Length: 327
Image (cartoon, rainbow, N blue to C red; front, side):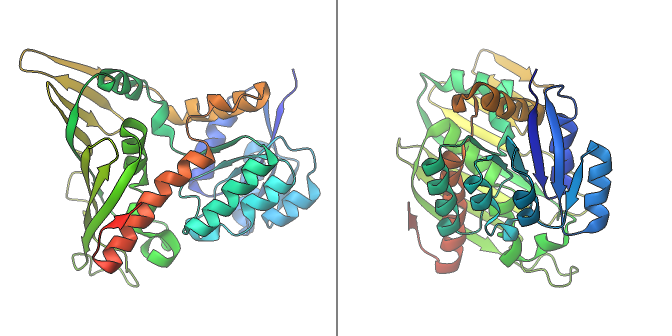
């Protein structure tokens, strides 16, 4: 059995998330890793039993000619030519979200993928959950008016996150998952309006990300959705209740983020709880897509993920201008 040869760019926390899945696959070899921090790249090299470790993606790409795929697991601000150089080499790419901090960069990569004809995937793993399959099926013949949801929690521990210039802020870096889920469920968006505030987080030096926001999106099919985003909770506040609430004409749906979905009418409540590792399913789908040359196995290819990024960047623009942004 021919193994899929994988290179890894970035050896931080999210890289370990994917590596833990790939190491369970008998048909995958992680042959090379790259990270500018020596301690991290050497630790990852040892973990995956890779042949080589490099300082940069450029060194890895120049030295490795026979890779089947590259996992790009780097901070939002670090997306320079990381993707386009891989594409030029003909490597299939898996890119962690957010894939860029500008539409110019994202569209550059999108066009390169289309020109080269490689397989791509972006890390929106929640699309692969069995409860999301149930939800999409339940919504198929139902009329929906209002949707509201939230992703409210604490401040992630990585240093670049607290600088909006580097992370894009919570909407772009984190709640993009729910923005993407809304697109997956309800299609494309006509307009975005976002209001946000700062001032609750006073004890983190150099912190300039909005503490909380509300983004309202009007979809082309008439659905109106509002997402609440917050990153100000302390350890004393329970991080619960996140997800989506969907108001149908004849039912109410509650999606508890990555845990459960409930279909509720006046007469009954049906609940499905997931126990899946959606990241494992996502990574397996990418590998199978490469082996079978079937990009249709990937639920979030780069070209589609760009549209979710666009919504979050539009929300940031709305915060800056105070105006509705037409997509």
